[in-house]
Amino acid sequence: MDFLRLYDTHYQQVRKFILTITKDDWAADDLIQETFIRVKKNIKSVRKTDRISSWIFKIAYHLCMDHLKHRNNETLHPVENETCDFNILPLKKIEQQQMNNCIREKMERLSEPMRIIIDLYDIMEFTHKEIAGILSITEENSKVKLHRARKELKSILSKECSLKYDERNVFICEPITKKNR
Image 1: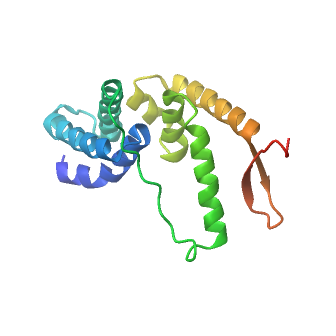
Image 2: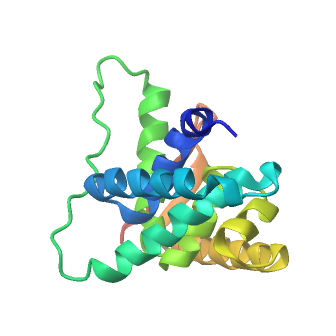
């Protein structure tokens, strides 16, 4: 297996995965580097090349968990929100960004394992088989965890957001205020 090809193929997605877990740009840089150092060091131990992606993400996941355990009282450097020029973006794109930000904010209230399972399946589009490999759980357990995480997110959203189609038939998320209840 060609390490450089693996690196080029997986770097962006693994970094996004790490950033999703750590919420720390600086830590993500360190952890992505450490992930690929370990990949390079242990690449010869991989027997089934069809599972290489899951193996790489599993390394990243375990490094993230170690990082989170040890970070306790350190100062965090949050990822800057994407800046956007509202004059350039069409209204639909702005609304979509706002809705994504709103849902992401609600997801932050989920436990870390719930957030991770939703990110892996719904955002990063991993299969339950791949998730099982990354998290060292069964496929069935992956399905159960995803179901519970979605149920919890739905509960949070239903209490705090009104999800509906507006007059233009665009799906929107409006926060529920005391007046709206």
